[in-house]
Image (cartoon, rainbow, N blue to C red):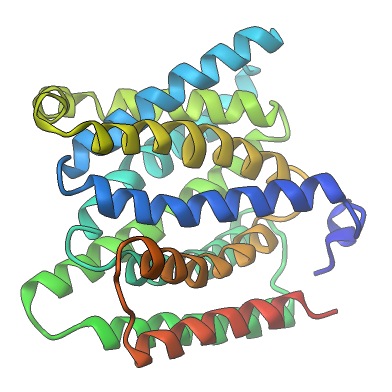
Length: 294
């Protein structure tokens, strides 16, 4: 489906810039999580990130005087807050303790396929043939990555399972968020989704306090970075772009994340990917190219 078919001009520069910003920042998040997870548990890292993001977003919301979202937006905000901001982040943080950052990004890449299926069914967005074909290619890449990293031991299999769980909650969160954006602004939907996710993660407060007391400054700064940029800025940019096109179309753009993560992890963490992993990443990008063809 062409973007214009969803009511957005093909050259909507602001929406393209917003989607690109979200993709790049989310790619950097995989690397930051991999680094911070040495000093923070999965739950405490999620809670710390969400608290920083919530404070920043509430401050911006107050500055812009947008107030509370309308009542009709709250069901979608609540579901996306619990699933995407809460459960997704815990599952992803845990998964990245077991597998490399690039591998985690590629496994989460199953999410766009689920978004397309759920949005076609629940949001009646349809399933364009090129979108389905491209996602099939990218999904093949995800399978290749999983096979390249699975040695059959419990650790790698657990990591793969957690990353797949993250993909499922991410997809459900996006589909729930889309209807909320018909009634509320991107900033409102993101702010209160982040707040709900933080509330859902409050049971991890004792662990967060313990981790903060023992973590080096660099790890704590990673948590702050995750809250300000891949959370507050990236999720707001995503919601803005999502409000201007279909959920399936937006989901397909995230297939470029794995390639960016592999490159960042290679440069910053010294995680050299295997050839089969690179081949899977190439398939992910090829699938994106198919979905973007007109």
